[in-house]
Amino acid sequence: MELADRAVGLLLSFVSLSIFTYYTFWVIILPFVDSDHFIHQHFLPQEYAILIPVFAGVVLLCLLCVFIGFVMLKSQKKKA
Amino acid sequence: MKHIVKIMTLLVAISALWGGLLQISMVPRSHALLLPIYFVVCLGCYGLLMVGVGLMQFPTCPQEAVLLQQDIIEAKKYLKPRGVDVGSD
Image (cartoon, rainbow over all chains, first blue to last red; front, top):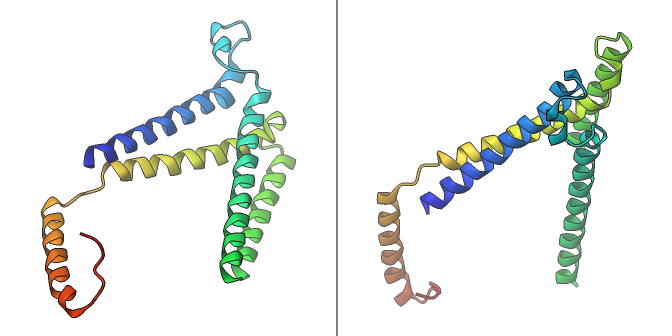
């Protein structure tokens, strides 16, 4: 049990650190690099740096609303 | 109701501050929309990191677990003859 918890914790922190470094690189360091450096091939075009977080945020908000609506409907059905 | 008013005022204050900084041009114009999103992503990453670190450092107490199981068995033995529903074994 303890090992599974620690594995999940390690995975979570690894994912968060990799997302942080990739995004920092994308937004802050890449504009200062010459456009014909090879590193640009590893990163999507800069418009996606805005689109992907906004899209993820909108999807999260929609899922939250759906979940709240679902719970409200269920509680109403139980009362009736 | 008061809690959401507090959150709204905080959001308005932060966006006003950001707009003010943009006007004084302390912040580069080209990155006006990008930096707040970057900060929000940073905050989310930080929260996830704290959850992961907390998970990794969570202390389990094996001795307490054994004692708890013994307590449960004792309580079930005590309550069952008295007619309390103690669930399945």
